[in-house]
Amino acid sequence: MVNRELTVLGTASQVPTRYRNHNGYFLRFDDHGLLFDPGEGTQRQMQFAGLSATDITRICITHFHGDHALGLPGILQRISLDDVPHEVTCHFPAEHEEYFERLRFATPYWARAKIATQPSTGDRHYALNNNLTLSVAPLDHGMPCQGYRIDEADSVRMLPEKLAAAGIKGPDISRLQQEGRLGDVTLADVSIPKPGQSFAFLMDTRRCEGAERLAAGVDLLVVEATFLDTEAELAESFGHLTARQAARLAADVGVRELVLTHFSQRYPVDEARSRYLAEAGAEFDGQIHIAEDLARIPFPKRR
Image 1 (cartoon, helix red, strand yellow):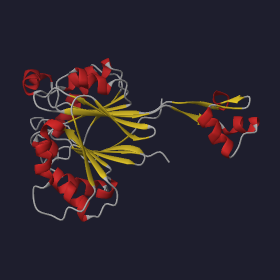
Image 2 (spheres, rainbow, N blue to C red; image 1 turned 60 degrees about the vertical axis):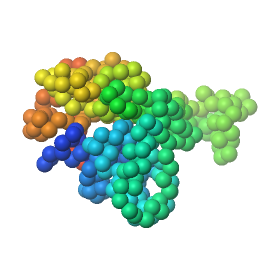
Image 3 (spheres, rainbow, N blue to C red; image 1 turned 120 degrees about the vertical axis):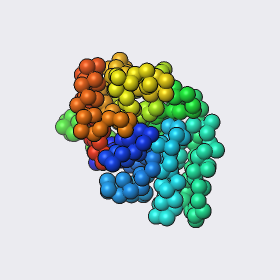
Image 4 (cartoon, rainbow, N blue to C red; image 1 turned 90 degrees about the vertical axis):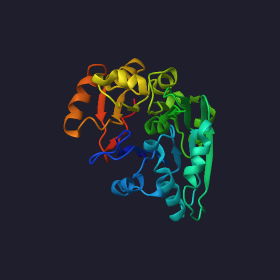
């Protein structure tokens, strides 16, 4: 059964508010559970969201500003405390590996979890299994920062009625899938294309080549929109995007659905939604989600 969903654990930028926890995003993609940028309070938000440490298979940190990483010590300790049986791999910018190690052992505890690290610089690609790839590319935030992308390989969906008509069943179906032909029957005769799905995660960045590459054509993009147009100069000076800029980026590279998050505390929740939608909607005509804490956003239907 396909199980693909984004759970938003926090939507605040530098300063959390009464209604917005610090960052935290959990992507469930079939058997994979990717936790992105766990800020303070992520453990508790996971409890509210019905998620456990055992659900996490990878942790992806864009950079080591506190609102994106200060929840990491608690998460790693919880993975040990709960005796998570599988290995958890952590991705982060290699230039700041020292900060990862400081956070990992910020306090004493019995570190019995299986934690692997894959620090990276530049563009990197990691095979998660036979049909899933995690890509990393640098972002522009004035310090080491990287975004992430998940790609599922294209495949085919077998058509039972055509298989039956061709007299192909049992182990021969697998043979046909692997070899592309069985006698006079080709794979194309008994199947239809099944395009892979994709996801990208961009935090704390100006528009840059890395952001464009990672977001290009994805089904679901999570992107920071710290400011509105009135603070465009502030966004540029601190290496952030406005809602309009984030939406323009998404439109230019062919994103299907857009999730805006990482909101400045200067925008109260009761007015932020309408203002963000208005600015983003002027640039992007696809589905726009204004992220809210503990929201669940299903993956778009396959193309």
